[in-house]
Image 1: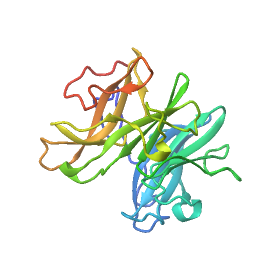
Image 2: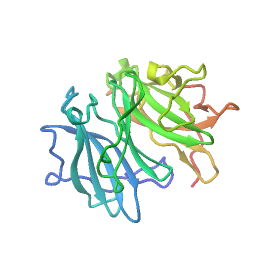
Image 3: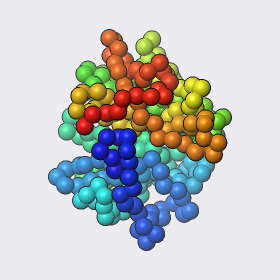
Amino acid sequence: MCSPDLVNWKKSGTVFTDGSRPSFVEGGGIWAPDVNKIGPGQYVLNYSMSVWGGTNTCGIGVAVADNPLGPWDDKGKMFISSEIGVTNSIDPFYIEDNGKKYLFWGSFHGIYGVELSDDALSVKEGAELIKVAGKAYEGTYIHKKGDYYYLFASIGGCCAGFNSTYKTVVGRSTSLFGPYVNKKGEKMLDNKHEILISGNKDYIGTGHNSEIITDKEGTDWIMYHAYYRAHSDQARTLMLDKVTWDEDGWPKVNDGTPASFSAKPVF
């Protein structure tokens, strides 16, 4: 999907065809893509592949392209849960820090990070696997702002329609690998955090956020998904909200719930 303003979207292509679709998890679904431009002219896509409930057989795959619209060349699995030693290895997030490349991932069995190879297509040989958050979380995203790294994640149930309990939460650290803490100094390793976005009378199941995107006027925006109570089919909706930062450097989204109306980003 492509958009000039994060509001109006159009379908612009398909990553995988029937012939190129990944197959390292038999019958597996594909979700939670993370696309990054890595090096000159190469785009790398990390994705989750799993059957529902396949916590030990699921894994993270990788594909490359010269253009974000493809064509994409699937390189297959980067690792599966049983190989890497992390149960439920899904929801990848890529970040570069101090000239090194890293991948973070995990879903309700701990959030982990590891250094990648120079081409970002595999785990670096001999790299240490480091746990950065506890079993309450999935959908990891780390944002660097000022002196802090902010770890955004989701808690609760994502996919039960209007009974979903999904929420977006955050902690912060002065180091990429933590410890990430809440405002009281309690650790995300102990499942402590600040709640950033929860439901309200119009929306429920507010989680799995995107990267924070800064528009031309310097305003920060975040996307995530939620169920819109007015939709009787209970399909999930893509949400867009403004992010502000309080005087202590903590992110805020409205009153802690989705806005019903907003000015749109400026690009």
